[in-house]
Image 1 (cartoon, helix red, strand yellow):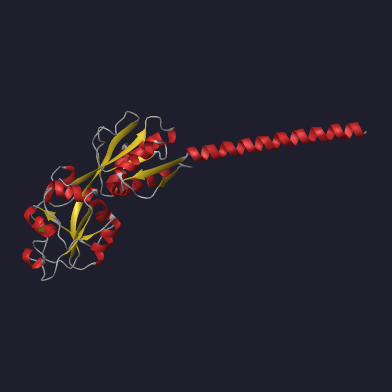
Image 2 (cartoon, one colour; image 1 turned 180 degrees about the horizontal axis):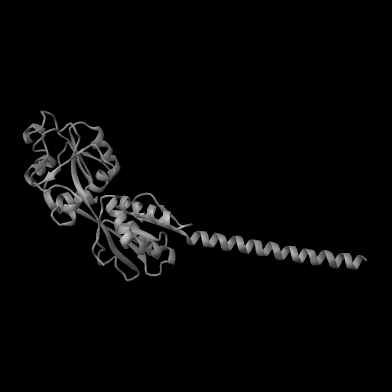
Length: 285
């Protein structure tokens, strides 16, 4: 009897161990699958709005997939993150530099977003600025709105750092490389800060995402530049030149989950999602 009892106990113990082992295996497998369903994104903060619009739409149609955005950084950080396997998608506000394209990643432009120059609603009577007038404002040569047909009030210039895409675009299309910045300019480190400041600071002016302004119906005055109105239609027609080129990068060895999001971003459905939020889908293949 004792031998039978011992044998039975050993048999049950072996069976329970097998169950426990299977349970551990299943748990590990489930955790692995869950990890594969996550897509981490990092890179240029100025591109996040467009990619987040796509991410939300993709999550809604794809059960079990979560797209997580790491704290905003710069284009170079997104590219390095993909190369090192830290993130699945890198967001960039420019084309790849030759030294960055080492053959291990895939880059594609997904959309365009105009940079709009806008003022607080208190700046009445100013709807269009010429290149020379923008230069006068950003250099501090002119400091009162009355000079441009506006109210008798001091211009509050909200600007961005030189290494940010918004300021680079302003210099490329209107200000030029040599124009000295106004000493009175208030430098805003992040675009959301500038957007908030333009909305809440009387007589202020700043440049930021047109798509964000339109899709969020911001109560600001969107200015025409050299008589060209900042609209998605003018961006798509190539009439309004000051645009960000929003791109994404992924590894050539990316997972099926990441590839699925990539494919969605460049599908007709993805293009419609972008247009609904006032972005201009890229025509590049």
